[in-house]
Length: 162
Image 1 (tube, rainbow, N blue to C red):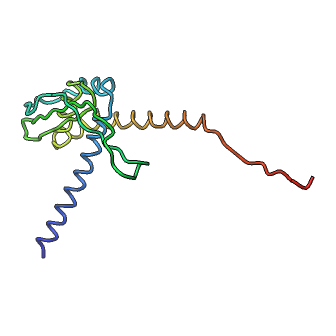
Image 2: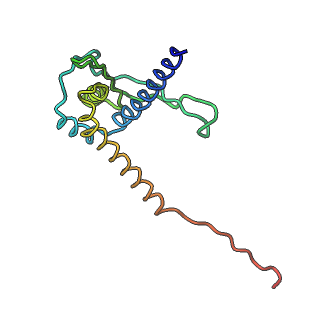
Image 3: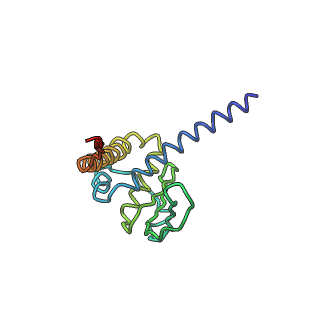
């Protein structure tokens, strides 16, 4: 019986960690190189062995009719990927849109750092948190701009008795 609870605890811990990793990988992938690279240069990251050098390729982007209907191939998108390993053994990956190899390499090293207890706090404080703050600010700016152009429609009812 204790094996089941230990197994369940282990799986829920893995789920929480994988969800957290999805969040920081998303922040790294969605960041513009102009935003990420200055943070990266100020990070003083540890040396990493390149497992897969940054390479440019294509992926098929899928869409859904009406957002939730049938899936269809929307088209291809250029992506750059990279994989690295820190001396402490953590493996990081970076997948970013476009052709910026430095962006992919930085994302991979930061991903590995976020998995390392020795480097996680620094990477989160100096890179991930500022990227998330910038993304929120950008979303809020877009929402404010859309709200400013919102048109309110109303209907007037005429009294036909006159």
